[in-house]
Length: 532
Image 1 (cartoon, rainbow, N blue to C red):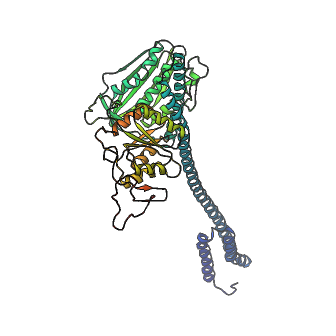
Image 2: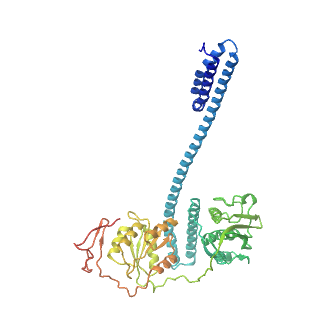
Image 3: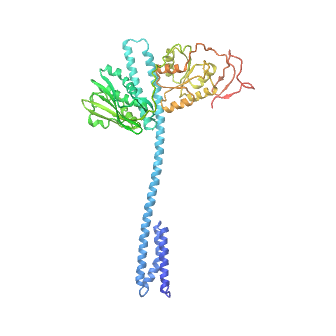
């Protein structure tokens, strides 16, 4: 190739070729075929030429061939490293994309599950409201002993079914992360005493001893979630009472340890029941787990109670477990973290307001309910409370009645055909409709949707109180007592002009027999759209 070239010229050429080839390795190693082709074109002709020259050029030719081999091996290793890097990066991005898709699918599934549970809650609680309401009304009527016993059994079955529904919903809320642990001042002695008193009668009927004790080193007041603590205690005490035929149940509370943020307390519920076999103790807190080979009745139920207790204890930053010996008894225990109370808690012991005819004298209540059975149940309950009842089957009819006549309170179902109860309440608030006493008319939600989100939406819409179905007459009476006033001096018939309403529009025209004044502004009766 360079027959007349001097030695230094050949050397410069070879160095240049090797330098260019080495520099090209960084950019061409991503594509192995291109890299090898480039190296062959750059170095092979020179190596062949040197190999054909006479003299001492054979050593240089060997070095060229060696350099070519090194560059090819280096290029292959670089290409292999890049391929692995690209594959790793691809796998990582694919994993991230898969995780994002899985998260989206999980969120969609969670939302679908929440919608299903909300619908299930509504669909199950709605007929339960009819069953429990009618049995409560029937139980208050004149019955002989056999009939009263039958009604009591019906009530027990209905309440058991309600407990199953509540258990499923509680577990679903925990799994969905919708269960929130509150931190409020509480007195442990009061909470434990209330949980024990719930089962005092049941234990007495079975001839069981039911005791509780708190160690002296426990602070009188802490901060925590009184509702969830009582729920866990009630579940464990209920199981203990059910599975114990003779002897008794003992509840004890002691200080496990002090921590920077407060206290770790240990609660134990011990019974003298049949006990639990060791092979079943590990799975006793699993969902739907039951004990089937014991004569005790601990296995009766859905098996969700201990699962919910485990989840609630976990939310309270504690642990739960059991120690049991067949034929001797069982001890269920759990720990929970409680904060330090900043100030003394003043416990006011007051008697809940009892239904009184005086407070409700002449009260008129409008019931807005689309279910015929529930309308009949609520109407019967209100009549037992000596109230004047009006019924509306949907929101549109209720708005018509509210515009044409004054009422003292509205019991509003949240889920109604067409316009729902929340929108109807917003319209009532926008129009400023008043009760017969002159204040804003109380709107009380009656709903089979029992989630906290449902309660928040109802209150945000302008409702004053929230009564989840099934509704008991005592809770209904207490709620109404909070919002109804003595109406003895209230003028029963207002002479103010009424607004005639239909589902399309409303116009300000006086009803026949009412005052002739008009609330319309200048220009006569102006029409307004009923819906926002």
